[in-house]
Image (tube, rainbow, N blue to C red):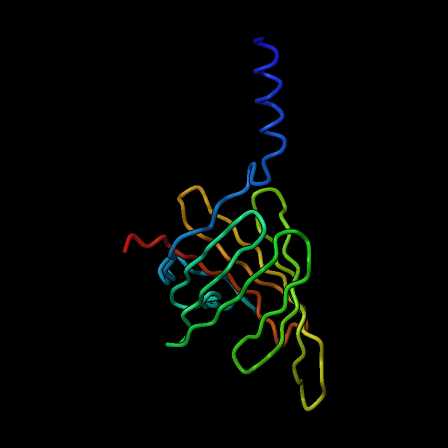
Length: 161
């Protein structure tokens, strides 16, 4: 009987889709004091990658970000099953993304179209999201072309309000 209980417990742990994955759900507020990231040429880039405030809802199959950006609300939904997600960012720009997990970090690879010197270009970005040991939400962004995507890092603190 004891072996059956151990086997069932192990099966549940292996089957758990969120095993080892953080739950980003909650309200997060941009923390300018903690956000310091060397950018191009060693300059400090202070940027709120998810706006001033973001409300995150997460399930086994999707993560929804309700981003407050310059007084506007931007909603982005990412499929967590490996399917491609389509969102529209400010400026009516269509962004196609795929979200995946790498250990305890959410990786969002996105592609959109922009214009550089009057020429259409494809913009590719990767955002990593994780919760650090202090409980803060960290968001890092890299991408190409380098003159359109500045490597950035933002720190968000969980809001109790």
